[in-house]
Image 1: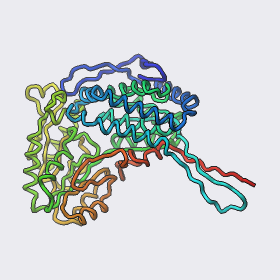
Image 2: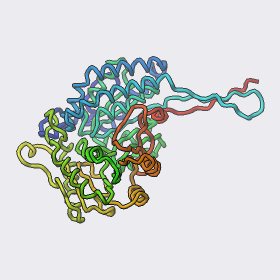
Image 3: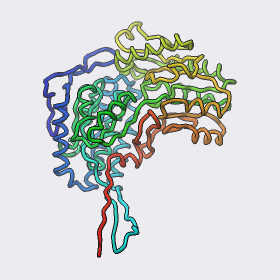
Length: 477
């Protein structure tokens, strides 16, 4: 683990294993941090805030982020391989993240010198000047998931460095290798020791300690809504600031006038990319009834043609699920769907033949005959499972798509620009894609409504989550 300037063992001496989910191969053993290690990391972060980091000028923070971006660019192939080996993402996919990772860091570098307050004309008597100053919130605790370990590290560390905060990062126990390598690059970029700390370990111990720690001023969390609710409860002791990017059950709507040659692969990969382990995956596919059978057949055929296998193979398009625990969860929903009366047009069972027996593989699964009330249509599965649901009219499908406790993403496919705009405005979701899905850019915010959390990542507003605003009054006589 990284605490201050030092790479250290857990105070308890305990370690845990990191294994390749494609093959079961042991990759590494890692320190199993707990509350005592979080205490040490928070102390190191606080010391950095009280030391040189608090005196760093915006252009110095910017320069450090630009150096870090260059180092990530130079070392990106290694970082991509770490994600592939550790969490199973196909190397063909993890390599594509270079532009986004480097772009995010350069975007935050630009924001470091663009943080401003306001001069406010007040109405009190006399010559009184009022202005606001924006200051770092302090020590940030960041708890990230396993489905995009490098990307989530960048999304948490980048704004912390831009705003002058210090951070204690806890990677997911299932995927800690690229966050640790990223932390090495942070030090190499010249960021002072203690500004970025990494505590590896489990959510129930290290993660809970971060959420409850009185020395942490803010928690930035990405993960399930259930864990998010627990973080809210644990954070209440000192009312720390929270930003929560949680789960989803996103609706993707295909109208009869859509370009199906674009909509079918777009809708399929909206659900199947990263083996469905994406919070904003479009797993509820609403299809206008007149084209329903055609779309079901085409989406199922598209999914069945995807190559599922070890992410280390450049030809692989979908890798394994992250763990035996996640495999059990997804497989249980395959059984639930069948029991509820849905029909698995493709997929529907774990892959176990040959090399598949060593890993945690589920093929792209398309369910037809799905009704809104079914658990597979309401609950986040986090696997390559797509529910295809017919609809008859625009107002009807909007109401049904919004009838979810989640609100992270949504999609609409239509040649009618007016309809695309109407549906986009009506959807209760933080991001709506029209005739595309899952596009992202460092300058565009991302986050959820309702049980999908609050706060935003990416975009200029992301840095607001890491800043406090102070009002200053000066009586000039």
